[in-house]
Image (cartoon, rainbow, N blue to C red; front, side, top):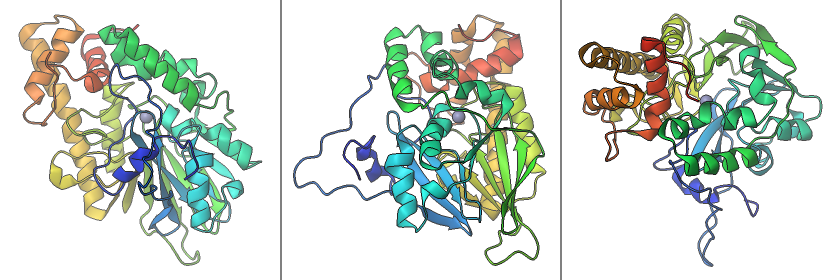
Length: 378
Ligand SMILES: [Zn+2]
């Protein structure tokens, strides 16, 4: 791995307990990569793992210990599903693909599942290496490709603003400004139902799956009948952060920044889509430890994960509705605290000494807006 690679120390986690997600620890200062002691073995080089025919997964570190999964689609016109952060293409994705016999410079299509920093922060770096590549994103999230400040003053910092955590807000701003390459253009506004062909009978169908973000989109990869070997019968669905189980780190809620009602509708919508595997943006948890943390879930495990995601979202909605019915609307933080109190045991949530979970606040606020009509955090 080249010197200065972001979060190089986290590579040791890839084979063990892996964590991810887009929010760093609250009030943490951005920290430089830890220095390696002389004699300590170097972390393994980044790899592109063939997880399904024509599908290669690359785990990209970002921020304060997060891991985002980027997927390379091996087709006559190669494509990337998401790009990590600004450092990911040069330091992780490019070397990983080279090790698998591919060249990042050959990528023709960047398909963003959504506009969040850990999924599009590397777009501009890929464009610099792969001249002529085109970027696809739902137009509802396009504003996030234009200006890093839309992230700093947007979804990422809801928790810090809800808690009045100025130090945490500033730390997050520093991390975001060094992790996102903006401005970066959107070449193709992705619409629900649009189909894109990568050659060789490989096609991608866009499915609008909002909730986590307004423009969140899943891509269903199918190989046409009669195409050469390596077909993925039944389709492979790349969902980014659109389907979350119980979130990317144990003991928290799924991250629903935009619209909790749309998120639940997305889970119902996807339950009617035929697919044989789910490729997720992070190593999301299910409802029980038995669900595991695999970012690529196949067959019955994929269906179970989708179902558990629905049950988790329903549990939050029912708990908050119950709190509001019995206690009235006492304001956001008291409502959040009471809701977490009801969910802590059944969902095995980890709460702080104040009975809150900072990493779950954005989600709780989305449900609070849905149930009370409250405005966005300021
Ligand atoms: Zn996201």
